[in-house]
Image (cartoon, rainbow, N blue to C red; front, side, top):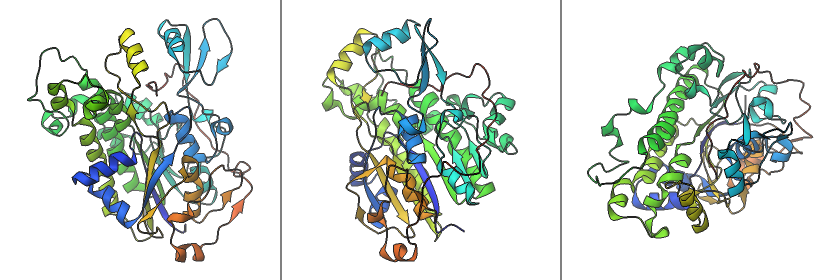
Length: 424
């Protein structure tokens, strides 16, 4: 049995400042509880600040140069056979893409060249359940389950949806709980949008940005993950919410109008609550996990990066290229956040120098496994109680790359598109 069971909740786009403001208003009680009863602090991130490489680093403890996932996709210039794992960011590259001069191929589970947490856990006989992890399609045949991030795109095709889940036996039950944007009742959106603040010329595609791209997928994986966790009850469970990141790119200007200067009062009234309401929605899900936390469990909430206003030069460029709505960015690598609570966590401890690379070593230690010496991060000992550390000495292993257990996946189907991305 592992020393501790661990639940990891990923919420990109969340920052410590946003949590503190929400807690001060009384809107994010579970995060306030985690800060008081557990540990919290900013979490340094990596560049380029894109979710797939950073979350692969979180799950492997390795840098992108080692684990092999470096962007949302791989790229090929028209007429060239050279595959690029990463393209520079900038206006010219964006123009090449819009002109059809750059083709893309998806990041898949075969793109990762390092062993992940679930491989290490499985090698020691510990099951793991993974929901919506980046670069996990096709799903690996691991002990417990893996629900890949393509599932919501395939929900209307039973065979392809089943291919996004391992094992496949609960695919019908998971599909039955999938949500589409059109399924969300308008009354449920009252905390997000003030529909009484209607005004001429409002052409913001809020249904696409809030419902189709954020809320519906997050609900799909939340509900599907609950089905799988109840069925398998793995000692390590990880789930990921992308919606706050998605809405931050579009709705940040309404939440922070002082940073932009051109937000009309009626826009602020109509859309100004989206970000806070989305954080509250996610906090409610975390709260349900916190309420059911067992005596031997630790709950971790991790954001790989925060969100900040788009700089003026990018706003000007976007206006020239017809992008009138992007207002939030994480391109300059704003800190994310980590919250931890549970058995063995020191109440009220504050982290000062934590990194996304520290998550994997810390989870391995919490679960009683050796930490690999080729991991870049460290164990976050400052959040741990002395009694726990005395009872569980740190052990090391040279590397998990030499494990006899080899991850297996199905072949990547032809024509698989990259998951929808966005400029950081």
